[in-house]
Image (cartoon, rainbow, N blue to C red; front, side, top):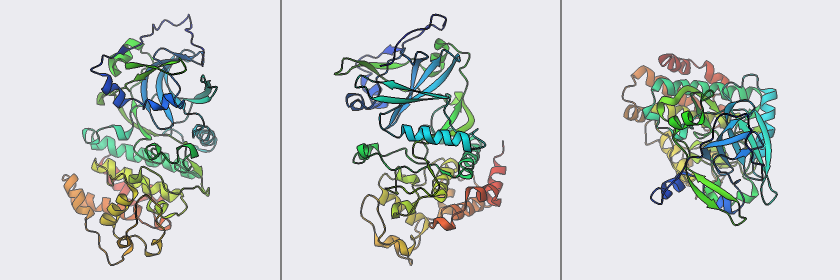
Length: 416
């Protein structure tokens, strides 16, 4: 375990939050990480007020995923707040560290990419090593925000920034999504998520708390609400309700993060497909190698989500998502028939070239965004026709999309 100590020169008196009563326990547990991750020795046990690596004091909970927990901490050395991403042992953390180093070396513009500032390791009571990546503090993910409450100008600005971030990666020959699922998790469906370009690895900017003490931070983010957790090893942890960031704290900047499954162009992985399936390119569900074009499909899903304020494909099962695609975009390539490798049973009608799309894209836009005029709608339909090409070799590239007249026209309409 990491040594817990409090530097004497620090004048920022720690505040350890509030233990909740029995009436609030369910709410905290529902919003916090699954308890079994601690009992299985996957999550590193944390309490508010702990000091890690003799440098970082835990101040609040930011979130969690299948492979990590994320905490806000005060850095005594730099005298500012940071985010600590504490990885599960043997997960994708080492791959993320490796790709992060490559990104820092190879990518020219990382302004919209979430790259680490420092890293260290924590040893738990079972002598397992947990990699900890230190990041700047960013706000909530796109997936945790209510998009319709945000201005369309901010959402389109986010789409433009995301495309620039993706362009920076692609110029360096890096595909954002790539690595297959670690063997220890391969048969646990609930853990197969957030491993591609999707709305949970895009973070909104948040106002700086650099000059704020703990009390001020809690005024904005709320005091940590927590429950004591006693592990069989005798180690104590806390289940902490993640922060809720109000809309007035958000900035119009975004960053792309979570590079634990990124790969270099030309790298082959197994399995090809991934979840969440709503953002998964259709070729990956048909056992085709992924590439830069696979990222473009995911980006188009996100672009439409930002433009419309709702998700274009919203099913959890891969077969249902394919059905939605066919309903909206028409039949899949005939030569893909028999290649489907996703969850569920394939449907021969997906490849029937006489089948017509039953849901019209222009009707969808009119229903969700009645404020959009015919000219703007034409631009959106043009963008979708180029980005939602089933065949990856026919799909528009990130660089081409940057220069596309319709894309540039939409960006100009919502220019800040």
